[in-house]
Length: 187
Image 1 (spheres, rainbow, N blue to C red):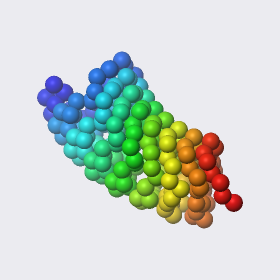
Image 2: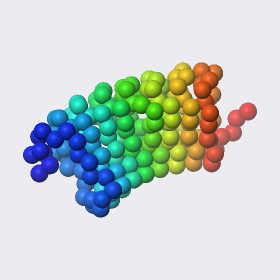
Image 3: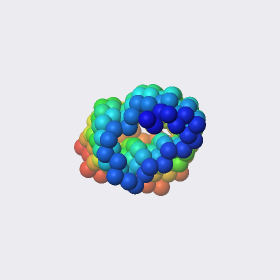
């Protein structure tokens, strides 16, 4: 039914008690620039059709009960400035396609999910990101190539299963680095 609202520019349903899944028909909302469904009880996966929303500048789905992997189609949203998917139950690896989101601003937060594998080196292309939060996941690979971005001020990769962490001399603006509760064993 939501797909019938073809002229809709913003869908703001945050902080309610929504309990269903996000309908795939959301991809029919071609004029949608803001999709804010945070702080509900949404279940199911993020529909891949979200990648059809070419006008979207913010996708806020945090603090729900979403499961499944992050669809690689999110990487098609070239105008996206805000992406918050933290505090869900998303699993699998972080799609390399997210590195195409070069217009993301300030904070990129995937914390408190069940993400595994590595932080893709493509995320280093996000030169506007100042705060990268990926704490409380199950990231294990020690090859965290986050690029040479000098914009990082905060990196939080605490509560994962990292065994090492390569530092970059380019992180001259870094104010906070949190690697607590990992398995790091390096000198």
